[in-house]
Structures are given as structure tokens and as C-alpha cells.
Length: 80
Image (cartoon, rainbow, N blue to C red; front, side, top):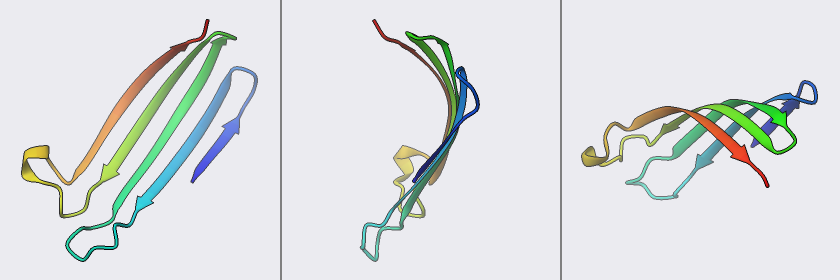
């Protein structure tokens, strides 16, 4: 599920949510949600700042870290 809100010609925000059900008793469901802001600097340049959170449940292998993870991402897109 994704929700977008355009505030004006330059700024917009969005929310995303996803749930993955593997249908297996040994594997927990995975949930992911994100929130972000987008700024259209010029028609060809866009900046995004995003917070992303993922919850693997109890099945995440130890070598891959914790069962819950998050990140902040700054993305620049240039179209030419």
C-alpha cells in the first residue's frame, strides 16, 4: 500500500506499507514500512529523504543481524 501527498509543485510526501506472508509455520511474516519526502529541484533533478523500517520477525538468521532493521536514505535522481 502506498499513499502520496503532493503539497505543491516542488514538495511531496509518501508512506508505504508491505506485509509478506510466507504461509509457513516456521517462518514469521515480514513487515516493511517507509516514510519519505520528495523535492523536485528542477524538472530534471529530484531529491528524496526516506526512512525505511523492516521487521523480519523471529526467523532472521543471526549472521544477518537483528530481526528488525531500519535505515535513512538520501536519494538524488538526475534525468537527462
